Each structure stands twice: as structure tokens, then as C-alpha cells.
Image (cartoon, rainbow, N blue to C red; front, side):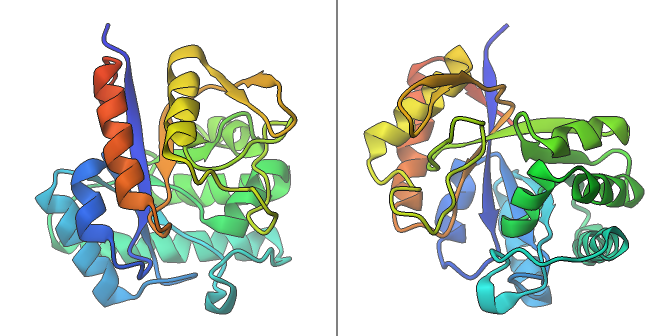
Length: 249
């Protein structure tokens, strides 16, 4: 069987590169009006995805535009459930009107990181996704509490790894606000992805390797190197004989 991987990207966030990135990926995570985006941005991003035959997913986050959803907010689980359900529903209305399938959900920023380590938050997120549609694939950090919660909720879970983020010894991502948290060199980014996809290993900031399971790779759409990184990664995967295709439940 030919090895394969999904390439996903967070889009509809106002970075201005969506049209260039869309043909290079297989799945788009579209901001749903919480941390970024609005109805017009969602409509346009869905249009771009449909043109490129890219799978469309919801990208809900804390409703905190000032901090772009990257600041953790303490909320009771019922409020986390409600915000995820609300934001997924907002995008679902748009895709339904345009005869496009909603395929997956990936939490954004601080909500994603919190759900990765907190089982109560993870359960609220997973149940909101399940109740939005049992067919939806939940994108979750490989090895995290959100993976466990998604499986417990009866969802198909895509274990996610990151192309441009530095990993820590426990498998978590180095916080973005720390120096060196993002890979800036193209060859380092490509090498990290190939190691995760082909060998199931990633080198941590401490200098040793840990095991990871990779179903989908995230390319951030708001970085200055996003388009160049995406082109380089697609070529490297092609050269390695790895097929790029979406994760479908």
C-alpha cells in the first residue's frame, strides 16, 4: 500500500495567503468567527476549497479576537461544549448552502492545547464534535487527551503532527511565545515531517527522539514562509513516494 498523509492548514484567518495555499493542501481548517473570520470570510474560504477539491473542516477557538484565540480562558465544560457546537454550526450552514461536505473539526490555539492535556476540556470538545455530526473527523494532537476523548466519544480521530513547531520531551508543542518555538529553516521543517511520516519519530528540543503517530500534518497558514514551506513539503513527499490525501471518516 502506498504511504499517505493529509496536509491540513488553518485558513480564513485573514493572513492573505489562502488562495496560494489552497492548491497545496488536502484539508482546510476554516476559522468560524471565534478567534478570527466572519460569515464573508467563511464563504470565500469554502469557495476556494471547493475549487481546489480540498476537504473543509471547522476551526473553532476561544472567542477572543484580541489574543487570536491563543490565550487560555477558564470556562466550565458546558460553555466549551456550547462554543464549539456554535462555531461548527456556523460553518455548517455555509457549506450546506454550497453543496460542500463538512468533513472534520480541529480546535484552534489555546483551546487545542488545553484539550490536549485536560481530559475535562477534551471531553467537552469531543462531545460537541460528536453532537455536530458523528461522521466528523476530530483532528487532535498525537498522543494527547483529545485523542482519547475523541475515541471514547465514538469519533474517527486523526492524530495530528506539526511541520513547523518544536516538540518537547512529553510530546507537547513548545509554546509559541518562547524563542525558537517555530522552525524557520525549510530543510529542518521538511526533515521533521519526513521523520514523522516515514519513521514515526520526531526530535525534541532536548535533542532526543520520541515516537509519534501521524495521520495529518499541520502547515500554519499565517507564517511568512507558509507558501514556500507548503511547496517544498509537497515536493519532498512526492519524492519520497508519499501520497497526499485527506483524512475521511
